[in-house]
Image (cartoon, rainbow, N blue to C red):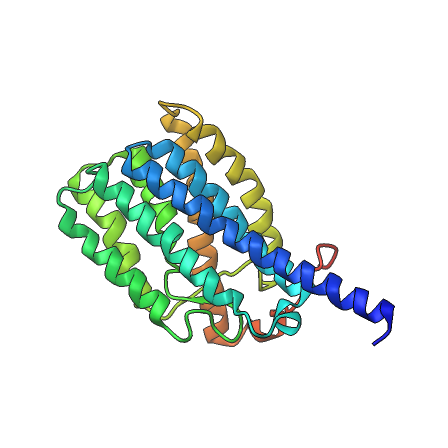
Length: 253
């Protein structure tokens, strides 16, 4: 191996390990979110969870750009990612809901716990055509709106039970970082939604009107996912052709 090839190999390995460290950073931040939630500092915990969500949304793009599976075949970053996701998308959000007593009884947490464990136990949780199958355990988003809206007992229960039921229904949900279907809309609206979330979390008493307005993105995501699944089942949309192995070409149509 020539010196140039050796330098190239070393640089690729460093880049690949850099991506894995970036993924692991989500776990570190998730740990501090857990500590904040246990201490009753819920807004801080949610802010940290937003950061972990940003990392989770972007590390896959970086991994595909670097092709970490080729450079470091002995290290499975997807396993690390799943471990972190269960912490930041499932356990910390549900701890906040339980600890803040946002449900009429903590027994209602059984529904999202079972749903979340079922989701992560599925071999095809992420389908071959690059969609999530069933509600993709976005319990951080569910918990955030239960926290902000503080609904009465029945609506609060429905807010955790309905996504739990949807977990078991094999409907495709958008996976914007790995699929071209509606990715421009998904990323574009997310760039509006995330600053709103940061702004609202910076306030001790967020404007409830703005909280309701911010629901535009979860509503878009669910409606768009159902529409795409319907189109695929009808045969009007061939999602497999839209799957990407590299980051989306942001100049493409």
